[in-house]
Image 1: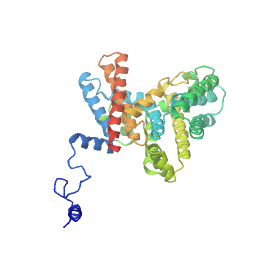
Image 2 (image 1 turned 45 degrees about the vertical axis):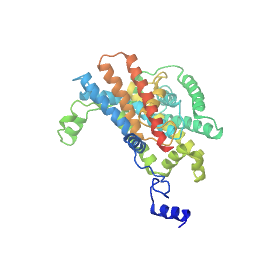
Image 3 (image 1 turned 120 degrees about the vertical axis):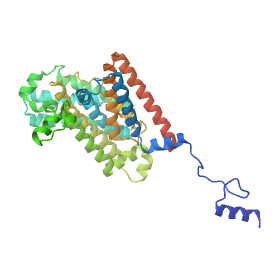
Length: 373
């Protein structure tokens, strides 16, 4: 039998490369534990923020015993991260497309000013003023999307520019005036509804007759409920609709998405418009949180939302991430800030810890992305 015939027969039998006349195998024989961990984290990126959150809770339960694990403290953390979590949902949509939106914070502030000032100062019924605020947020997001897609400019540059533009519009429309809590309560109390306090234990006890002892001490507000509703709706959109699949595809490989027949420009415009609308919902929650309307509120909201998204496992390079991860990322920021404060550390060390978390999260993302290449 000739050498060629021997090689062909060996190839059909699937002989390993070490045998005479065998052919090379293209499958990896043994994968080490690090490789398997890398593949697991690539398939389930949300597992990382869950682990970090659990570690943080365990650490601070020992660092601040009797304080950190108190139900009221957990309630406080949840209320503190509500607005950032909602903005994080908006930011997640954009980052999934390999973009970034530096204007989410100022869109929220502008929408809150439109809602509050239109209703309180100009006397427009809240039934009209509130939708106008939502429309303002939607319009701002739409403008971002159109500029990004039609002018083919980087999202970072576009939203950096619109951040200044929307900020100027905010100053112009608000006249740099703050609307007091008493004025909002008298004229448009609906705008403060998201700040209404809820006591879960009393609710279940009075309405259903259930004595759920573990809920004693918990104090929430309707803003947290709105946050969960927004997150649930966007999760459904991303995971159960064609639009959601187009978002992931556009962020993972836009050229391949276009070849597959996806209108990536329309998807991007829809993403930015939806993000702007969610920012307007965050504006409603913001009014409920502070009681009044301030054109200076939420100055750090842009960076905070990006922080929650990145720590939550969403890749800055697009195509990979989840809404659940973003919510957990927001909780991680809240837990670390709260835990460090209860431990007696100064604010600068809280910022230091959050900065370290961001760098570690991006480093892990880069390491995980190697599996796809």
